[in-house]
Amino acid sequence: APARLLVVGLTGRQASALGNVSGVESWRGASVDARPLEDVFPDRSSLVYLTAESDTVLTEVDAATTYVIGGFVDRNRHKGATHAKALQLGVRTA
Image (cartoon, rainbow, N blue to C red; front, side, top):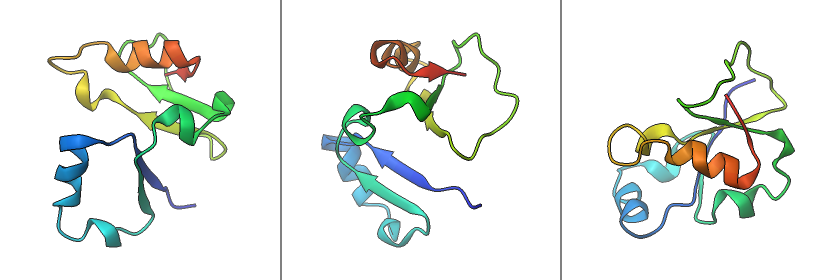
């Protein structure tokens, strides 16, 4: 099955920047939801947060699992931010 992209939690400058991307509203299989992750997915049992700091190695992809790619902010200024967020929300990491 094809992958689906859901961008969540964008507000302020990030939301404006995405809105300025030409054609973003017509991306196939993609949608944007301004609500934070915890509101979009109140049942977090099927989530796996992908973080560089996780001790778990992802060896296969499960179609019933939603993978959260949060590491875009971690590289320089916010090291460990997504791992901390996953732990705060009680979401598994890999």
